[in-house]
Length: 328
Image (cartoon, rainbow, N blue to C red):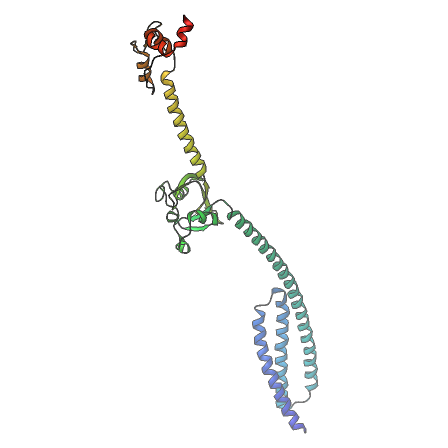
């Protein structure tokens, strides 16, 4: 291959190098805007070297086109030196970048571990809260729109589930009561500023039996301590209520019995001769009349043996002949 063709080929190679270097400079200028402040200075130096290479390529083309051969060796030496410095700076930048990436990776691994620990703690806390919420005591969370947000199984076992539950069942539909849609509603009282509301409610079952509950309502707050609804617990006092009712009935029966007993209590004046008794108004009455008026006792008349012997001796001794022989 003669000198002419080598001259043309070298010009083509340098033109391609100039084109790619120009594109690399534009890319480098964009990268410089996003690199960290620690690497920005080195990146500026690298970009400067790339611009120097571009100028060197341009000068090489100029000399080739003018066929000036005196400075080729000097230009080639400068380009080789610049290339070595360029590679050196690139390696330094790569080293620093890898070191930074390594530190960042370690920091990210620490964050990932911390995130996993926090996630596990949150999972455990959620499980603990779920266990606390799903206990034997019926619990219900209601928002300020009277919609049941969440309730445990113990609640639904008592008050039942509804097809409206998914769309937000209203509390007064789930457990209607006398205080619903009034200012005595626990939710309304909590929204008015009360910190705790204790009241009672009744559940009418399908078999007609009534179940009594003591309801305790307290504010339900979000993460910003803002009121978003109430938490209600329901304590079944049906057995205690029935025991209290039975106790009241027994007390009434005892009071009635005591009143009947008290009808003939106290000191009763009685005549020593005729045995008549004096009432509270001072009138004298026969014993049987007085007792009949002051109690539920009724009398049936008969005659005792002594009086029968005294009043009707003939008839008495006919019935008791042995007693007559003993007296003779």
